[in-house]
Each structure stands twice: as structure tokens, then as C-alpha cells.
Amino acid sequence: MTGPVALRGDLARTVPVVVGGGIAGLVVAWELARAGRPPLLLESGPTVGGCIAAHLVGGLELDAGAESYATATTSVADLIDDLGLGDAIVSPNPVGAWVRYAGGSAPLPTAALLGIPAHPLAADVRRVLGLGGSLRAGLDRLLPAGSGAHSASLGALVGSRMGRRVVDRLVEPVAGGVYSTDPDELDVDAVQPRLRGALREAGSLAGAVQRLRGSGARPGSAVAGLRGGLYSLVVTLREQVEALGGTVLTGVDVAGVRPREDGWQVTTSVGDRLADTVVLAVPGPAAVSLLDSAGIPAPATSAATSDVLLVTLVVDHAGLDRHPRGTGILVSRHARGVSAKALTHATAKWAWLAERAGPSRHVLRLSYGRGTTVAEEAHPLDERDLTTLALADAGTLTGVRLDHSALADSALVRWSSALPRPEPGHRAEMDRLRTQVAARPGLHLAGSVVAGTGLAAVVSDARTVGRAVLSSGQGAQSR
Ligand SMILES: Cc1cc2nc3c(=O)[nH]c(=O)nc-3n(C[C@H](O)[C@H](O)[C@H](O)COP(=O)(O)OP(=O)(O)OC[C@H]3O[C@@H](n4cnc5c(N)ncnc54)[C@H](O)[C@@H]3O)c2cc1C
Image 1 (cartoon, rainbow, N blue to C red):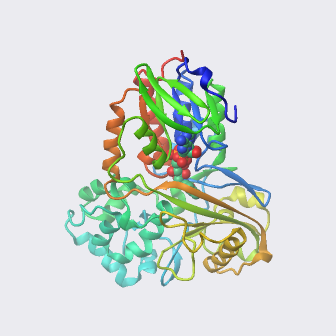
Image 2 (cartoon, protein in one colour):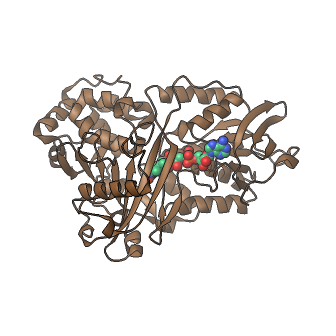
Image 3 (cartoon, rainbow, N blue to C red):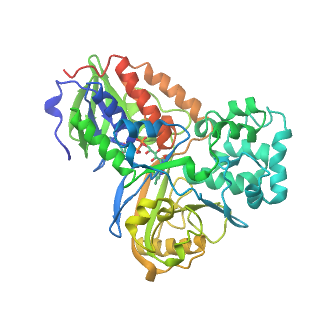
């Protein structure tokens, strides 16, 4: 069912309500539905999927948000298998991505985690850091295990053990690409909860990275995708939730959740609804506001989020056929002459997409925004100016001169409040928030605000939340 539907008539009937139809809300709804407890899912946007969305550019259906998932854990692959989509899983071109820093561009070191090298003296690390930078990074092995271990931010931790060059040339482009914020403002425990423990056990940061990475050595093998695009994941989730008796309503904004003696009153843009269970699966600012309506005060650290601007270019240029920057390139904030923070060469990354696009037609995805708002230099520009900026950036980053004559089509997507910016202390504060929520029978919290950014973390957490709802006996049979 699509579009707003009045809920008032249903006030007497109580079912579990899931608020937010991103991947987190859909996974929770799917867990409930397949356990025979079909929920009502309310999504404020026109479609489900949240940060997983599709758009048509140059006749190609492309992911407009997330386009791959981390394979360090099997959480997403397991879900895909359970949904019956396992045959569509594809690996990216193993050639890997590059990084652009103040002094040039180079392939990203193959063995790394969040940009932190597992082998500081390896040739591919030396190429980015220079010999002096690599030797400084190698000092990490000689420092006591406890040195720097209590640093609150990722940047401080890596800088104290391996030196600032590792932060500026490797960690900042990688972590900035994922979190749209500076590593000096990123909570270590939120972005990699096992890093401090691994550091203590291994005695060095490089050793910790080796432990956490396991044996996989190629950057291209650290993620996977779906043939046809990741968007099919949310389409299938919705279909299965509905086939199992769940109801998915889009265009319904949830304004408040208030406790009642017999459950929760969910106030929406189209009326109120009584629920025995409410799962909040919305981004930080919306979660804070809904929790406030439920009588749970805002966390001490902000549930701040960043905006991202994505410009997708479909271009015809044989110079890109040789994939000059592998699957793409991450950009250090210290690199000059480029505004984009990352470029994904999607047709180099995904063979299925190159096949669909045809000879010498390329899909380039550039992202902008490193802080609260989309990059100031890009913000005031209109669509044509942004496309021109993206063409210029793509040319600088790939080394292949591109202008409007090469452009077959382009699209612009502004993601607002899309990515959590976990400041130091965020993980501890979210754990406290979850404890407060757990004390309210029938109320649950899911999604990137508590799970962290990325499908692997969000999916795994959402499945746990779904099972917690079922085992708590709430979300029981619809009455
Ligand atoms: C451009 C971009 C690219 C990304 N690329 C990747 C990638 O390649 N790999 C990866 O692993 N991760 C990627 N991510 C991150 C990943 O997509 C997210 O971590 C994940 O999708 C978050 O899912 P979620 O369900 O927690 O939140 P969301 O996807 O934000 O979903 C929350 C939903 O709640 C709805 N909502 C909000 N308020 C209300 C309300 N009051 N009432 C009802 N509904 C409401 C929203 O409309 C939204 O649909 C990317 C993110 C972005 C923005």
C-alpha cells in the first residue's frame, strides 16, 4: 500500500509499529512479519529505503545512496541469502581504489582498516607516506601498548601512535569519506568498537588492524554489492513484509510516541495509532525528538548528522576505459584544486553496470560535504554549476579531461541529516540511551543512530532488535 492513509479508525487495534522505513526499520519489520507478528511500518518519505535509493540517469537505474556493503562480517550477506537474493551478490573489481592527498595520488594500501595501515613499511604505504612517514608510522610497534590507547578521537589515537601523516593522508580521506567528518572529531568506539581491545591485545595499532582485518588483503574484497543495484534489497524487504501480512505506509510522518497504560500512542500526520510495541528506526535528530515525546531526555552528546551531496555523471569518454583510478578515489581535505571528497568510478567497480552502460560509457559518482552542511563551496551553486564543478573535479581526479561535451546525463541528490557524526563519547552515550529505552516496556531503538554508519552495522543491529521485540513478548499477535 502506498501514500498516506488515515489511521484514526484503527486506534482500537494494537499492532507493533515500526517508525522509519530505512533498512533498519524494514529489517525489524521483516523479522516481526516472518515470526507471524506483522507490523505497521510508517515512513515519512515517498518511498522506503532511506539512504538506500535508486534513480534513473542516462537510462541506467543507479543507486542514489548506498551502493555496497562491508564484508568484514556476514550480516548483510546472511540477510540477502535469507531474502533469496544470494545469487545476485557481486564482488567489485579487485583493483581497489586510490587516494589523493596534498602531494599527489596513489593506490590505497591494500591492508588497512579505516585507512590505518596494517604494515606501515609496505611498499604501497611508503608510496603514500614517503619513507619518513612510513618510518614514523612503524614506531607504533615500539610504543607501549597503552600509549595513546585512551585518546577519545580516532585522529588522536592514530596520530599519537603512527604520526599525523597517517591521519592526514590515509585516515582522514577514508574515515571522512564514510562519516563526512574529521577523524579528530570521530569517536573511536563508535566507528570501530573493537579497536581499543585489539590494540591492548596486539600491543600495537598495526597489529590490531591485522587482527581485525583477518586474512583478506585486497581493498576491493572488503565490500560487495548486488547485481542491478543495492536498491533491490529494500524493494524485496518491503515486498516480503507485505506478503507476510505487514502494512507499509509511506508519506506518514510520526510526530510523537506517548506512553499509555495499554501501550503507546503514536501520533502521525494522518492520525493516531495505538501500539503495543514501537520501534524507532529514524535518524538522530528525529530519534531525539521522538524519544523526548516518550519522556526520554536527549543524550548528552549530540546525535548530530552530516549532509552529503551526490553528483552522478554519465559520460562518454574512452580515456576512462583503462580505469585510471581503479574503482575510485578518496580525497584528503588537504588536497588542493578539488572540492569533492570522493569519486566512485561505478562502471569500473561493477562489471554488471559496465555491461549495461555499453562501450566507453562511464558512471562517475562524486560526493561533497565534510561537515554539518554540504561543502560551502558547493552549497550555493545551482544544478548546472554543480555539474560543471563535478566534471572539473572528475577530470582532475581521474586525469582525464572532461567537459559538457562528454556528458550524456547527470543527476544531483542532496542527502540531508543522512550520516551520524559520532563525536567522542557517542558510543557510551548511545549505550546509556538504549538502557533508558529498555526500561520502557514496548519501546525499542534501531538504526544508524545507535548502530553506527553502514549497512553491516545497521542490519546486524536491526536483526537483534527484531529478535528482542519477539522475545520480550511484545509485538505479540495483532488484536
Ligand atoms: C549517500 C550515501 C551513501 C552511502 N553509501 C553507503 C555504502 O555504500 N555502504 C554502506 O554500508 N553504507 C552506506 N551509507 C550509509 C548507510 O546507507 C546507512 O548507514 C544506512 O542505510 C542507515 O539506515 P537507517 O535505516 O538507520 O537510516 P535511514 O536510511 O536514514 O532511514 C531512516 C528512515 O526514517 C524515515 N523517517 C525519519 N523521520 C521520520 C518520522 N518522523 N516518521 C517516519 N519516518 C521517518 C526517513 O525518511 C528514512 O527513510 C551511505 C549513506 C549515504 C547517505
